[in-house]
Structures are given as C-alpha cells and as structure tokens.
Length: 176
Image (tube, rainbow, N blue to C red; front, side):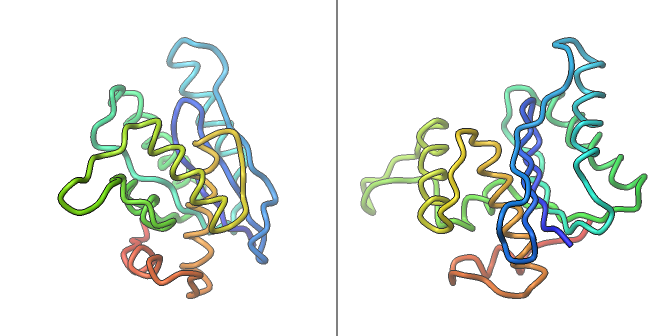
C-alpha cells in the first residue's frame, strides 16, 4: 500500500509514500510537446502510469483563481476520469487545506497589520513548513504540495495526525 499525493499542473507534482511515511517516489511529471491536446493527453497518461490500484490518493482540488482555468480544469478532470476508468478512488483536497495541513495561512504580520503573502512568498513559506514538519525538501513546489497531499492521505488512512492543526483537514476529506 502506498499513500499518493497528486498536485495537478503543467508540471504535476507526484509523491508516493510507503506505509512508514517515507517517500518511495517524488517527481515532477510533464507531458510531451508544448501543443495541446498532445501535451494534455500525454501528461494525464504519464500521471496515471505512476498510480497503482491499491494506492490511497489525495489530489488537490481545482484552484479557484487560476490564470489558466481551461488547462487546469481539463487536467484535473482528465486525471479524475482516468482514475475513475480504472476503478481507483481518491480524495479531493481544497488548496487552502493543503497549506493548512502544514500550518500556513497565507498571511504574515500581527493582528491589525497583516498582509497576504504573494504567490512566490507563499510557495517558499509552504516549502519551509514542510521541511520543518517532515524534513522533506524538493526544488519543485508542485512536488512539495504533492508530498503534503500524500501525508494527508496517510493521516486519513491511519487516523493519526502529527499536529493538532491537521485534524480539521483530515476530517473534511470527501471520497470522490
């Protein structure tokens, strides 16, 4: 049994953890070509190729405010359709809950003087939080998000969390 996290993007993060929580596979997956539909089809194929029948999977839900909404929606549903075809169940995790699992809110500063983190700042804060929580380091923020998703899958399945702030994330998972 493996715990798998998938962070769909043009460079999709994929992480598979063993039963002990140690990474078995952590990689960034791309499609072939820079033209769709070949890029999209090969990206979905390359992602699905990594999945095993008995994996417990968490996949990040579609981001609400993406610049490339059509690509994101097609990729997310392409992956879900292929998982469904293979009879593989998965859990969808809200992007905000991925950050919450490692205690990142997206804000910095003191009450009354807070500001929202920029996109690149938030990625760095999340990567730092994953290193602090789990000791996992990777150069790709997509792989780091996939790692968090794999840890969520593991916590959901084992019914154990390492930190109190993770409990509400695990309790809110919905099997798709």
